[in-house]
Amino acid sequence: PDLPDLVVVGSGFFGLTIAERCAADLGLKVLVLERRYHLGGNAYSEFDPETGIEVHKYGTHLFHTSNERVWEYVNRFTEFTSYQHRVFGRYQGQVYSLPMNLALINSFFGKSHTPDEARALIAEQASEIDTKDAKNLEEKAISLIGRPLYEAFIKGYTAKQWQTDPTELSADIITRLPVRYNFDNRYFNDTYEGLPVDGYTAWLSRMAEHPNIEVRVDTDFFDVADDYKGKVPIVYTGPVDEYFDNREGRLSWRTVDLVQETLDVDDYQGTGVVNANDADVPFTRELEFKHLHPERAASYKPGRTVVVREYSRFAEEGDEPYYPINTAEDRAKLLKYRDLAEKEPMVLFGGRLGTYKYLDMHMAIASALSMYDNKLKPHFADGAELK
Ligand code: FAD
Image (tube, rainbow, N blue to C red; front, side, top):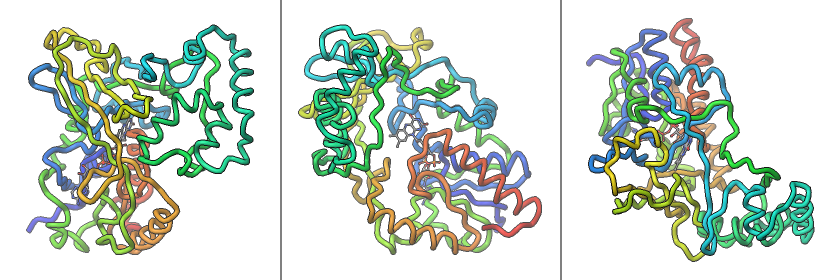
Protein backbone atom coordinates (compact mmCIF):
# COMPACT_ATOMS: atom_id res chain seq x y z
CA PRO A 1 0.00 0.00 0.00
CA ASP A 2 0.93 3.65 -0.47
CA LEU A 3 2.66 4.86 2.69
CA PRO A 4 2.64 8.58 3.49
CA ASP A 5 5.95 10.33 4.29
CA LEU A 6 4.73 11.17 7.79
CA VAL A 7 1.88 10.10 10.06
CA VAL A 8 0.53 12.59 12.59
CA VAL A 9 -1.63 11.18 15.38
CA GLY A 10 -4.13 13.81 16.57
CA SER A 11 -5.49 16.82 14.70
CA GLY A 12 -5.28 19.48 17.42
CA PHE A 13 -3.20 22.61 16.98
CA PHE A 14 0.00 20.70 17.60
CA GLY A 15 -0.69 18.00 15.03
CA LEU A 16 -2.07 20.37 12.41
CA THR A 17 0.88 22.74 12.72
CA ILE A 18 3.27 19.83 12.13
CA ALA A 19 1.19 18.59 9.19
CA GLU A 20 0.89 22.03 7.60
CA ARG A 21 4.62 22.81 7.86
CA CYS A 22 5.71 19.42 6.53
CA ALA A 23 3.25 19.56 3.61
CA ALA A 24 3.62 23.22 2.65
CA ASP A 25 7.32 23.74 3.38
CA LEU A 26 8.76 20.32 2.47
CA GLY A 27 6.15 18.94 0.10
CA LEU A 28 5.71 15.80 2.20
CA LYS A 29 2.62 13.61 2.04
CA VAL A 30 1.11 13.71 5.51
CA LEU A 31 -1.58 11.46 6.92
CA VAL A 32 -3.34 12.81 10.02
CA LEU A 33 -5.24 10.25 12.10
CA GLU A 34 -7.95 11.53 14.43
CA ARG A 35 -10.10 9.35 16.63
CA ARG A 36 -12.89 11.88 17.13
CA TYR A 37 -15.51 12.51 14.44
CA HIS A 38 -13.98 15.91 13.69
CA LEU A 39 -10.58 17.54 13.31
CA GLY A 40 -9.25 20.32 15.53
CA GLY A 41 -8.70 18.76 18.94
CA ASN A 42 -10.01 20.67 21.93
CA ALA A 43 -10.23 24.00 20.13
CA TYR A 44 -12.98 22.64 17.87
CA SER A 45 -16.28 24.54 17.79
CA GLU A 46 -19.67 24.22 16.10
CA PHE A 47 -22.28 26.79 15.17
CA ASP A 48 -25.51 25.90 16.98
CA PRO A 49 -27.97 25.48 14.08
CA GLU A 50 -30.93 26.95 15.93
CA THR A 51 -29.42 30.14 17.37
CA GLY A 52 -26.42 30.71 15.09
CA ILE A 53 -24.13 30.90 18.14
CA GLU A 54 -20.63 29.39 17.93
CA VAL A 55 -20.25 26.88 20.76
CA HIS A 56 -16.78 25.76 21.80
CA LYS A 57 -17.31 22.02 22.30
CA TYR A 58 -14.54 21.54 24.84
CA GLY A 59 -14.79 24.76 26.86
CA THR A 60 -14.21 28.42 25.94
CA HIS A 61 -11.07 28.97 23.93
CA LEU A 62 -9.57 32.46 23.95
CA PHE A 63 -6.60 33.08 21.71
CA HIS A 64 -3.77 35.25 23.01
CA THR A 65 -0.02 35.40 22.45
CA SER A 66 3.01 37.62 22.72
CA ASN A 67 5.01 35.39 20.40
CA GLU A 68 5.62 37.28 17.11
CA ARG A 69 6.31 34.17 15.11
CA VAL A 70 3.15 32.44 16.30
CA TRP A 71 1.09 35.56 15.61
CA GLU A 72 2.45 35.81 12.07
CA TYR A 73 1.85 32.09 11.53
CA VAL A 74 -1.75 31.97 12.76
CA ASN A 75 -2.66 35.01 10.67
CA ARG A 76 -1.96 32.96 7.55
CA PHE A 77 -5.12 30.97 8.30
CA THR A 78 -7.54 33.38 9.92
CA GLU A 79 -8.25 36.95 10.81
CA PHE A 80 -8.94 37.81 14.44
CA THR A 81 -11.61 39.97 16.04
CA SER A 82 -10.69 42.60 18.62
CA TYR A 83 -12.31 40.63 21.46
CA GLN A 84 -10.64 41.14 24.85
CA HIS A 85 -11.44 38.60 27.54
CA ARG A 86 -12.85 39.70 30.88
CA VAL A 87 -14.11 37.44 33.64
CA PHE A 88 -16.52 38.13 36.47
CA GLY A 89 -17.22 36.16 39.62
CA ARG A 90 -20.51 35.70 41.48
CA TYR A 91 -20.41 35.37 45.27
CA GLN A 92 -23.29 35.57 47.74
CA GLY A 93 -25.65 37.36 45.40
CA GLN A 94 -23.19 39.93 44.05
CA VAL A 95 -21.05 39.96 40.92
CA TYR A 96 -17.43 41.13 41.09
CA SER A 97 -14.86 42.07 38.50
CA LEU A 98 -11.96 39.61 38.25
CA PRO A 99 -8.97 39.16 38.37
CA MET A 100 -8.82 40.57 41.91
CA ASN A 101 -8.38 44.30 41.45
CA LEU A 102 -9.36 47.66 42.89
CA ALA A 103 -12.92 47.40 41.57
CA LEU A 104 -13.37 44.07 43.36
CA ILE A 105 -11.82 45.34 46.60
CA ASN A 106 -14.01 48.44 46.60
CA SER A 107 -17.25 46.59 46.01
CA PHE A 108 -16.34 43.70 48.30
CA PHE A 109 -15.41 45.91 51.26
CA GLY A 110 -18.16 48.41 50.42
CA LYS A 111 -16.10 51.57 50.13
CA SER A 112 -13.61 53.26 47.87
CA HIS A 113 -9.89 52.75 48.42
CA THR A 114 -6.93 54.48 46.82
CA PRO A 115 -4.37 52.00 45.47
CA ASP A 116 -2.19 52.57 48.55
CA GLU A 117 -5.09 52.13 50.95
CA ALA A 118 -6.07 48.88 49.26
CA ARG A 119 -2.48 47.63 49.34
CA ALA A 120 -2.24 48.41 53.06
CA LEU A 121 -5.57 46.72 53.77
CA ILE A 122 -4.64 43.49 51.99
CA ALA A 123 -1.14 43.45 53.50
CA GLU A 124 -2.66 43.77 56.95
CA GLN A 125 -5.16 40.99 56.31
CA ALA A 126 -2.44 38.77 54.82
CA SER A 127 -0.18 39.25 57.86
CA GLU A 128 -2.27 36.65 59.71
CA ILE A 129 0.03 33.91 58.35
CA ASP A 130 3.64 34.09 57.18
CA THR A 131 3.92 32.62 53.65
CA LYS A 132 6.93 30.50 54.59
CA ASP A 133 4.92 28.84 57.38
CA ALA A 134 1.97 27.92 55.15
CA LYS A 135 1.29 24.19 55.37
CA ASN A 136 -1.47 23.87 52.79
CA LEU A 137 -3.17 25.77 49.99
CA GLU A 138 -5.57 27.54 52.36
CA GLU A 139 -2.80 28.89 54.57
CA LYS A 140 -0.72 29.87 51.56
CA ALA A 141 -3.62 31.79 50.02
CA ILE A 142 -4.43 33.57 53.28
CA SER A 143 -0.76 34.52 53.63
CA LEU A 144 -0.90 36.11 50.18
CA ILE A 145 -4.27 37.91 50.09
CA GLY A 146 -5.80 37.63 53.59
CA ARG A 147 -8.75 35.61 54.84
CA PRO A 148 -11.74 37.67 53.56
CA LEU A 149 -10.71 37.59 49.88
CA TYR A 150 -9.56 33.99 50.19
CA GLU A 151 -12.87 32.83 51.62
CA ALA A 152 -14.91 34.64 48.97
CA PHE A 153 -12.90 34.10 45.81
CA ILE A 154 -10.54 31.16 46.28
CA LYS A 155 -11.92 28.72 48.82
CA GLY A 156 -15.18 27.53 47.24
CA TYR A 157 -13.92 27.73 43.67
CA THR A 158 -10.74 25.78 44.42
CA ALA A 159 -12.61 23.15 46.43
CA LYS A 160 -14.93 22.56 43.47
CA GLN A 161 -12.09 22.52 40.94
CA TRP A 162 -10.16 19.90 42.90
CA GLN A 163 -13.02 18.12 44.67
CA THR A 164 -10.81 18.56 47.70
CA ASP A 165 -10.87 20.92 50.67
CA PRO A 166 -8.07 23.53 50.25
CA THR A 167 -6.65 22.54 53.65
CA GLU A 168 -5.93 19.14 52.07
CA LEU A 169 -4.24 20.60 48.99
CA SER A 170 -0.54 21.27 48.71
CA ALA A 171 0.66 24.83 49.24
CA ASP A 172 2.75 24.37 46.08
CA ILE A 173 -0.30 24.51 43.83
CA ILE A 174 -0.16 28.30 44.04
CA THR A 175 2.94 30.42 43.97
CA ARG A 176 1.31 33.81 43.65
CA LEU A 177 -2.20 35.22 43.84
CA PRO A 178 -1.86 38.49 42.02
CA VAL A 179 -3.99 41.41 43.17
CA ARG A 180 -4.04 44.41 40.88
CA TYR A 181 -4.16 47.72 42.70
CA ASN A 182 -5.84 49.40 39.75
CA PHE A 183 -8.98 48.95 37.67
CA ASP A 184 -7.40 46.82 34.95
CA ASN A 185 -9.67 43.82 34.43
CA ARG A 186 -8.24 42.40 31.23
CA TYR A 187 -7.80 38.70 31.77
CA PHE A 188 -4.73 38.32 29.54
CA ASN A 189 -1.83 40.73 29.20
CA ASP A 190 -0.41 39.44 25.94
CA THR A 191 0.47 41.68 22.99
CA TYR A 192 -2.10 40.00 20.73
CA GLU A 193 -5.55 38.77 21.57
CA GLY A 194 -8.69 37.99 19.63
CA LEU A 195 -11.02 35.30 18.33
CA PRO A 196 -10.99 33.81 14.83
CA VAL A 197 -13.43 35.83 12.72
CA ASP A 198 -15.02 32.78 11.04
CA GLY A 199 -14.69 30.54 14.09
CA TYR A 200 -12.18 27.97 15.28
CA THR A 201 -13.21 25.18 12.94
CA ALA A 202 -12.74 27.33 9.83
CA TRP A 203 -9.26 28.24 11.08
CA LEU A 204 -8.32 24.65 11.91
CA SER A 205 -9.72 23.38 8.60
CA ARG A 206 -7.66 25.90 6.64
CA MET A 207 -4.52 24.59 8.29
CA ALA A 208 -5.38 21.15 6.91
CA GLU A 209 -6.34 22.36 3.42
CA HIS A 210 -3.02 21.62 1.69
CA PRO A 211 -3.51 18.93 -1.00
CA ASN A 212 -0.68 16.85 0.50
CA ILE A 213 -2.55 16.53 3.80
CA GLU A 214 -5.15 13.86 4.37
CA VAL A 215 -7.10 13.95 7.65
CA ARG A 216 -8.77 10.65 8.52
CA VAL A 217 -11.33 11.18 11.31
CA ASP A 218 -13.03 8.41 13.32
CA THR A 219 -9.71 6.57 13.19
CA ASP A 220 -7.91 5.50 16.33
CA PHE A 221 -4.18 5.17 15.78
CA PHE A 222 -4.06 2.04 17.93
CA ASP A 223 -6.38 0.25 15.50
CA VAL A 224 -4.04 0.84 12.57
CA ALA A 225 -0.66 1.19 14.30
CA ASP A 226 0.78 -1.94 12.68
CA ASP A 227 0.43 -0.35 9.24
CA TYR A 228 2.75 2.52 10.17
CA LYS A 229 4.87 1.81 13.26
CA GLY A 230 8.51 1.40 12.29
CA LYS A 231 7.67 2.06 8.63
CA VAL A 232 7.25 5.86 8.54
CA PRO A 233 8.07 8.64 10.97
CA ILE A 234 5.20 9.34 13.37
CA VAL A 235 4.39 12.45 15.37
CA TYR A 236 2.14 11.28 18.22
CA THR A 237 0.01 13.85 20.10
CA GLY A 238 -2.24 11.46 22.04
CA PRO A 239 -1.76 10.59 25.73
CA VAL A 240 1.79 9.36 26.33
CA ASP A 241 0.73 6.75 28.93
CA GLU A 242 -1.77 5.25 26.49
CA TYR A 243 0.91 4.85 23.82
CA PHE A 244 2.82 2.57 26.19
CA ASP A 245 -0.30 0.64 27.33
CA ASN A 246 -0.21 2.46 30.69
CA ARG A 247 2.61 0.17 31.70
CA GLU A 248 3.98 2.66 34.26
CA GLY A 249 0.46 3.46 35.50
CA ARG A 250 -2.01 6.10 34.37
CA LEU A 251 -1.19 9.78 34.60
CA SER A 252 -3.94 11.66 36.44
CA TRP A 253 -6.05 14.42 34.91
CA ARG A 254 -9.00 16.59 35.78
CA THR A 255 -11.86 16.72 33.37
CA VAL A 256 -14.79 19.10 32.97
CA ASP A 257 -18.40 18.12 32.30
CA LEU A 258 -19.96 20.73 30.06
CA VAL A 259 -23.73 20.90 30.36
CA GLN A 260 -25.33 22.91 27.58
CA GLU A 261 -28.74 24.55 27.61
CA THR A 262 -30.56 26.93 25.27
CA LEU A 263 -32.53 29.51 27.23
CA ASP A 264 -35.49 31.70 26.25
CA VAL A 265 -33.76 34.98 27.02
CA ASP A 266 -31.82 37.23 24.73
CA ASP A 267 -29.07 37.83 27.25
CA TYR A 268 -28.53 35.58 30.26
CA GLN A 269 -25.56 37.13 32.04
CA GLY A 270 -24.32 40.10 30.02
CA THR A 271 -20.83 38.67 29.46
CA GLY A 272 -19.01 35.55 28.27
CA VAL A 273 -17.73 33.98 31.49
CA VAL A 274 -18.97 34.25 35.08
CA ASN A 275 -17.23 32.17 37.73
CA ALA A 276 -19.38 30.64 40.46
CA ASN A 277 -17.44 31.37 43.64
CA ASP A 278 -19.98 30.04 46.15
CA ALA A 279 -19.10 26.58 47.48
CA ASP A 280 -22.73 25.45 47.42
CA VAL A 281 -23.21 26.15 43.69
CA PRO A 282 -22.08 22.88 42.07
CA PHE A 283 -20.66 24.26 38.81
CA THR A 284 -17.47 26.32 38.53
CA ARG A 285 -18.35 28.61 35.64
CA GLU A 286 -21.17 29.67 33.34
CA LEU A 287 -20.31 30.41 29.73
CA GLU A 288 -22.57 32.42 27.44
CA PHE A 289 -21.00 32.07 24.02
CA LYS A 290 -22.81 34.85 22.12
CA HIS A 291 -20.81 37.43 24.09
CA LEU A 292 -17.53 36.21 22.62
CA HIS A 293 -18.69 37.54 19.24
CA PRO A 294 -20.68 40.75 19.69
CA GLU A 295 -19.91 41.58 16.05
CA ARG A 296 -22.17 38.68 15.00
CA ALA A 297 -25.20 40.08 16.89
CA ALA A 298 -27.29 40.49 13.72
CA SER A 299 -26.93 36.81 12.84
CA TYR A 300 -28.20 35.48 16.18
CA LYS A 301 -31.76 34.30 16.69
CA PRO A 302 -33.39 36.91 18.95
CA GLY A 303 -34.72 35.85 22.34
CA ARG A 304 -32.51 32.77 22.63
CA THR A 305 -29.07 32.14 24.06
CA VAL A 306 -26.77 29.16 24.63
CA VAL A 307 -25.32 28.69 28.10
CA VAL A 308 -22.84 26.04 29.22
CA ARG A 309 -22.16 25.20 32.86
CA GLU A 310 -18.83 23.60 33.75
CA TYR A 311 -18.50 20.92 36.43
CA SER A 312 -14.95 19.98 37.31
CA ARG A 313 -13.92 16.50 38.51
CA PHE A 314 -11.19 13.90 38.42
CA ALA A 315 -11.02 12.14 35.06
CA GLU A 316 -11.82 8.43 35.03
CA GLU A 317 -11.00 6.00 32.28
CA GLY A 318 -12.84 7.11 29.13
CA ASP A 319 -13.19 10.77 30.20
CA GLU A 320 -11.59 13.62 28.27
CA PRO A 321 -8.29 14.48 29.98
CA TYR A 322 -8.23 18.30 30.37
CA TYR A 323 -5.85 19.51 33.07
CA PRO A 324 -2.81 17.52 34.27
CA ILE A 325 -2.98 17.05 38.06
CA ASN A 326 0.76 16.57 38.31
CA THR A 327 1.16 14.95 41.70
CA ALA A 328 4.61 13.72 42.80
CA GLU A 329 3.49 10.27 41.68
CA ASP A 330 2.52 11.61 38.25
CA ARG A 331 5.90 13.28 37.87
CA ALA A 332 7.69 10.03 38.69
CA LYS A 333 5.62 8.14 36.12
CA LEU A 334 6.17 10.87 33.56
CA LEU A 335 9.96 10.53 33.86
CA LYS A 336 9.64 6.84 33.01
CA TYR A 337 7.36 7.56 30.06
CA ARG A 338 9.79 10.21 28.80
CA ASP A 339 12.54 7.62 28.86
CA LEU A 340 10.41 5.18 26.91
CA ALA A 341 9.41 7.93 24.47
CA GLU A 342 13.01 8.83 23.78
CA LYS A 343 13.84 5.23 22.96
CA GLU A 344 10.82 4.69 20.71
CA PRO A 345 12.22 4.53 17.17
CA MET A 346 10.80 6.92 14.53
CA VAL A 347 8.19 8.40 16.88
CA LEU A 348 8.20 11.94 18.26
CA PHE A 349 5.83 12.85 21.11
CA GLY A 350 4.27 16.30 21.28
CA GLY A 351 1.28 18.42 22.30
CA ARG A 352 -0.46 18.62 25.63
CA LEU A 353 -1.35 14.92 25.86
CA GLY A 354 1.94 13.64 24.48
CA THR A 355 3.96 15.67 26.99
CA TYR A 356 1.46 15.76 29.92
CA LYS A 357 1.58 19.54 30.09
CA TYR A 358 -1.16 22.14 30.04
CA LEU A 359 -0.44 24.12 26.88
CA ASP A 360 -2.36 27.16 25.70
CA MET A 361 -3.02 27.19 21.96
CA HIS A 362 -0.15 29.57 21.21
CA MET A 363 2.17 27.35 23.24
CA ALA A 364 1.07 24.21 21.40
CA ILE A 365 1.69 25.99 18.07
CA ALA A 366 5.08 27.39 19.18
CA SER A 367 6.14 23.98 20.42
CA ALA A 368 5.12 22.34 17.12
CA LEU A 369 7.00 24.96 15.11
CA SER A 370 10.13 24.24 17.10
CA MET A 371 9.75 20.47 16.69
CA TYR A 372 9.47 21.15 12.97
CA ASP A 373 12.61 23.35 12.92
CA ASN A 374 14.73 21.21 15.19
CA LYS A 375 13.75 17.66 14.33
CA LEU A 376 11.51 17.16 11.31
CA LYS A 377 13.07 19.58 8.84
CA PRO A 378 16.65 18.46 9.61
CA HIS A 379 15.50 14.86 9.13
CA PHE A 380 13.50 15.23 5.93
CA ALA A 381 15.56 17.98 4.27
CA ASP A 382 19.07 16.99 5.38
CA GLY A 383 18.81 13.32 6.32
CA ALA A 384 19.52 13.86 10.00
CA GLU A 385 18.53 11.02 12.31
CA LEU A 386 15.05 11.45 13.75
CA LYS A 387 15.20 11.74 17.52
P1 FAD B 1 -5.54 18.50 21.49
O1 FAD B 1 -6.23 19.70 21.01
O2 FAD B 1 -6.06 17.82 22.70
O3 FAD B 1 -5.49 17.47 20.29
C1 FAD B 1 -5.10 16.12 20.44
C2 FAD B 1 -5.92 15.29 19.49
O4 FAD B 1 -5.40 13.97 19.45
C3 FAD B 1 -7.37 15.15 19.89
O5 FAD B 1 -8.20 15.59 18.84
C4 FAD B 1 -7.55 13.66 20.17
O6 FAD B 1 -8.82 13.18 19.81
C5 FAD B 1 -6.46 13.08 19.27
N1 FAD B 1 -6.03 11.74 19.69
C6 FAD B 1 -5.59 11.34 20.90
N2 FAD B 1 -5.29 10.04 20.90
C7 FAD B 1 -5.50 9.60 19.63
C8 FAD B 1 -5.36 8.32 18.99
N3 FAD B 1 -4.95 7.23 19.65
N4 FAD B 1 -5.67 8.22 17.68
C9 FAD B 1 -6.11 9.30 16.98
N5 FAD B 1 -6.26 10.53 17.55
C10 FAD B 1 -5.95 10.67 18.85
N6 FAD B 1 -5.83 27.40 25.14
C11 FAD B 1 -5.81 28.74 24.94
O7 FAD B 1 -4.88 29.26 24.34
N7 FAD B 1 -6.84 29.53 25.39
C12 FAD B 1 -7.90 29.01 26.06
O8 FAD B 1 -8.81 29.76 26.45
C13 FAD B 1 -7.94 27.61 26.29
N8 FAD B 1 -8.96 27.06 26.96
C14 FAD B 1 -8.96 25.71 27.19
C15 FAD B 1 -10.01 25.15 27.93
C16 FAD B 1 -10.00 23.79 28.21
C17 FAD B 1 -11.15 23.18 28.98
C18 FAD B 1 -8.93 22.97 27.76
C19 FAD B 1 -8.89 21.50 28.07
C20 FAD B 1 -7.91 23.53 27.03
C21 FAD B 1 -7.90 24.90 26.74
N9 FAD B 1 -6.87 25.49 26.01
C22 FAD B 1 -6.86 26.83 25.80
C23 FAD B 1 -5.75 24.67 25.51
C24 FAD B 1 -5.95 24.16 24.10
O9 FAD B 1 -7.08 23.35 24.05
C25 FAD B 1 -4.67 23.41 23.75
O10 FAD B 1 -3.62 24.29 23.63
C26 FAD B 1 -4.73 22.67 22.48
O11 FAD B 1 -5.82 21.80 22.54
C27 FAD B 1 -3.45 21.90 22.35
O12 FAD B 1 -3.47 21.20 21.18
P2 FAD B 1 -2.92 19.73 21.06
O13 FAD B 1 -2.87 19.50 19.62
O14 FAD B 1 -1.70 19.56 21.85
O15 FAD B 1 -4.01 18.80 21.80
